[in-house]
Each structure stands twice: as C-alpha cells, then as structure tokens.
Length: 173
Image 1 (spheres, rainbow, N blue to C red):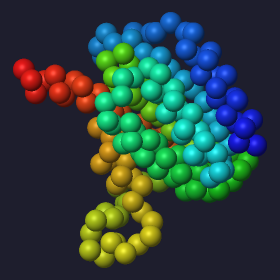
Image 2 (image 1 turned 180 degrees about the horizontal axis):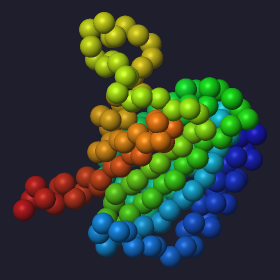
Image 3 (image 1 turned 120 degrees about the vertical axis):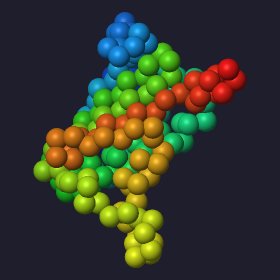
C-alpha cells in the first residue's frame, strides 16, 4: 500500500518538475508547485512527508530549517487525518506545496472535516497542560514556521517558511 502511494507522488513530482515556474503575485520570485492528495490514514503520513521533503529539497537550498518544515508538516497532516477527518479512511487530505526560487516554502493542508476554532486551542505550555500527552501540534507548527494561518473554519492550514539564507544576508549588511 505504501509503495503504491510513493509511486503516485513520485510520478506527480516528476510531472511538476517539468512545469515552467510561475510568477508570484507579491514579489517576482518564481516557484514550482506540487498538488497531491493522500488517503486519510495515519500510516501514509510519514511516507508522504518523506516524499514531499525530497520535492522541497530538489527546489530549495538546504539552510537548516528543513527539520522545522518536516515537523510542522507531520503535525499538520496528523491533525488533518486524526482530528479533521476523524480517522475516516474514506476521506482524503489535500496538500499544495510551493517552493519559491528565493527559498520560501508555502504549504497548504486541507481536510474534509468540519473544522475547528483555532482560538479555543489551549496553550500546551501553561502549567495545567504540561502533563497532557497531546495538544502540542498547533503550538509546534506556529513555533517552527514563520507563518501559520487557519482558514475555512479550521479545515485549512497555510504554513510558510522563509529561507534562513535571506536572514543571514540581512545580518551581514
């Protein structure tokens, strides 16, 4: 089952790599985009993330933030499968990943669930929540990524990570 899934995403990645980069609206950096869906099963999340990280590293210079992107992606997908789609294997999770030539990565994860109010999520760092074995995914995503937005009643999460090389260049100036 996982092998079939990996072949599907590799084929999608190969097709995406042949596309011409499109201009971005808020600045001129071109990007490549991958759109893929996966079945709503916990067992496919990790292989999917492995393949998506390979896609990202094909179009983005390694800058040390890859682990941040990978962890945030794992959390977003796990939340979509478990909480969004309620472990219903008949539902799907949809992912769009854009890799910009300036190093920015933008990832959108959409589930088929009812959503949630992100303002009601408890702070996992507060004293009364420290011993809970769950509830840290959104906190991790917000900590690891430069921007995290919830849309469509929480059934869509948009995450963005800038390149660390831009930050290094600005510090030198």
